[in-house]
Every structure is written in structure tokens, then in C-alpha cells.
Length: 163
Image (cartoon, rainbow, N blue to C red; front, side):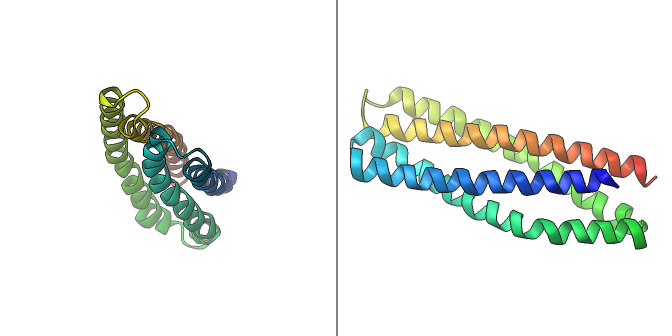
């Protein structure tokens, strides 16, 4: 059952990465707003800050929830293997289905941000705002792609082990 431990360990590390990333972006945004205070960086800060708060708090939530999830699945595996098929596999199928929606939204936001960036004045607020959207939605697209791959591998392992 090492694949169960591996999956949840990776989830915990990924969530910790998001806590650190979110905190870094929050601090960076305030630095740019207070120390640099140029229209481009003011615009950049709004989408970066908004998503950074989501990254930070979602990361904390997942980090603290992961141990409970691991124990639940290990309990299923050792004492109630039918619950793997009846509960964990359907849960993961839902999680994986959500990634398709997330990817569409993230790609649409990247394109929207790119359009805003290209339409904005050279060092203006809108150009910074567009770049902030591109950066954060791009980071989320990459991170969610890795999370989706982890989830697919985990679900495949569950299906293989608990036939």
C-alpha cells in the first residue's frame, strides 16, 4: 500500500508548496505596492494577490486535511476494502473530472490576461493586470496538471490493487 502513502505525501508537499508560494506572492505584492508604487506593478498586484490568498488558504486546508484523508483510506484498505471501490474511487473520479473544468478556466484566463496585457499601455496598470492574470493562471494550470497526473496514477493504482 505504499502507493497510498506516496500519493498523500505528494499532496501534502504540493499543498505546502502552495502555502509558501502564496505567502511569497502576498509579501511580494505588498512590496511592489509600497516600495515600487508604479502603475504597472499596482496592476500586477491585484490578480497576483487574489490568487495568492487562494493558494495560501487552499494549501493550508489541504495540508491539514491530508493526514485525515490518508488515515481514512488506509482504514478502508485494511478493514473495509469495499469502501475503496464504493467511496474512494468515485471520490477520485469526481476530483479528476473537476480538473477538466479547472484547465478550461485557467486556459481562458491565460488568454484573457494575454489580451489585456497586449492592449494595455506600455508601463500601465492594465498591462500589469494582464500579466498578473497570465502568471497566476499559468502557475495554476501547471500545478493542476501535475495534481491531475498524480490523481490519475493514484486512481489507476487503486483500481489495479482493489479489483
